[in-house]
Image (cartoon, rainbow, N blue to C red; front, side, top):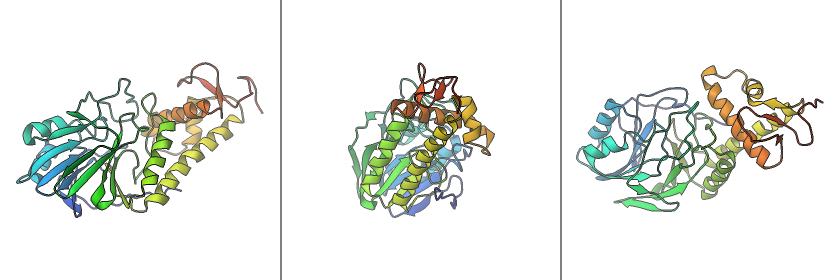
Length: 300
């Protein structure tokens, strides 16, 4: 089981000092995918970087501007281009300056069951391993595709911490939504983060994760367990995503079913590519999936 972290003390719009170099301000956009809201991070002292400025909410912009009074905003970093993460970047820049850093919107966004993709282009297309620094802080970009093809995490060197966006969330698992989301890439990105040995993860939604290695192990095991469940379901014969999802996600909030269907799809694409399952034709949302060697009409 994943040891989810869900308790968090905060007030909307209030800057909380959560570590020596980090403040967090939570936007008032709670929901089934954003949990308590988007947590925007301010890193530094007199010269500061903002990570994931958040959604287009006037009150959140005002809270950020108040927290930046008397300080110089040098960089605005985005982890990815979903509508709860990046839209406030340009309005914030217009008021406070700073260079917008991140990756542009993908050519084939997938928004069903997740926060809508937004058209976004940063001033600086960040590269894997690139560093952005200020007085007393150094942020290194770590490309982590999977949840989104353009997803980037940022490591704070001085605290051995990672701002992990939606790649890893303490309160819930992460939606992988094809065609932009990719389960194989997600597994590889989990391994990449695990290998770095971070002391703490700061997700954009929810509280930090401090038992990092064991949490990532549980996160990965959850996905692998889901694949075993899929294989078990397919022993009874071919199944579509519409047939698999209610059985795999019994009891969840029905608002999450669109995202659940797409996560199942991501698993099926990954498993078909690896030869664990078979599909006649393209691995689409409507396709029928089966165990290798079984026809569409075989039941056991």
